[in-house]
Length: 368
Image 1 (cartoon, helix red, strand yellow):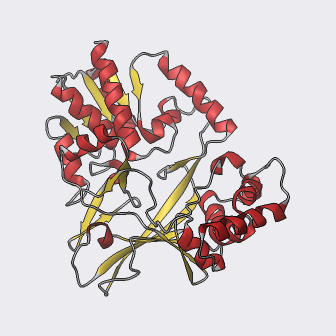
Image 2 (cartoon, rainbow, N blue to C red):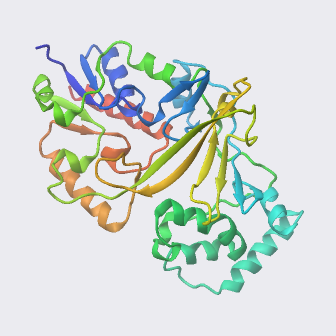
Image 3 (cartoon, rainbow, N blue to C red):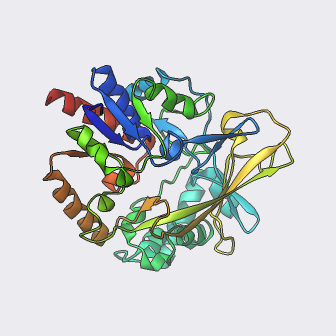
């Protein structure tokens, strides 16, 4: 059988960037993925001419011009700006917390008035050193914002009470004392024109690719190479011998609606605990796709069960220590290079994944 310089497990962002850069350096690569498509969780499914973000909303954003120029060398990005709305029991608020939010919450119209209101809210709680997420949030923004925009959403997202979550999850809450609804502070943001799939098609155009190919059902492929770039769950790589890392799962309920505009925004968060989903995504707004109908996705957090797709790492002391033990064990083999969200057990923005992949390839080529 044909041998390769690298076997890359996972056709998501990390694996695809590695494959592209290694192939440019005349290294042969075989990329495999257990799914029937490339792109990992960034994959878009075309439904009636609308690019549907199949695994949740992905908005590219970065302040790193090098990374921005890199992705734009493959495909042009539009000027989409992320401006999510929060819906609490039928009342709407702008996100992130800014002067529009404070006006909607309290009727304050000046930054000084908003700051004074927040300071009074915080002082009323009389919290010393926060012992959990609830106390941390109250010490930063007070009870009105916490109970309206944080509590219900966070408890749905993590599947437990805020008083049971560690405070570091919200080490800070950005407060903007301007009327700026742009969710990101980054200099560059947008969505690829024509969808993310076009980016991945170019990244993987010069490598061998096998889809519907689970590494753990085809371990003989490891014999075709001396080095494996692995982007899957790190604990499964060692058959869970040290224990299982914990994740949160997601369920997506996607529907076609016979209207040209369902909610007026690509993302609306539902922050009340009485609503089971955390947000509704209306996909056509990412690319301003003209259509007489629209496609929406209800996003439900759920408990992760074995065999389901792991989405959010639960980075608590127990899991972080377990991950470190797995990482140390795998490094001893000198065969696996770890990268991406699952293999590093970190929730990563897309620009961080790309930068990490580029740095990984540079290190491999330098030492090889």
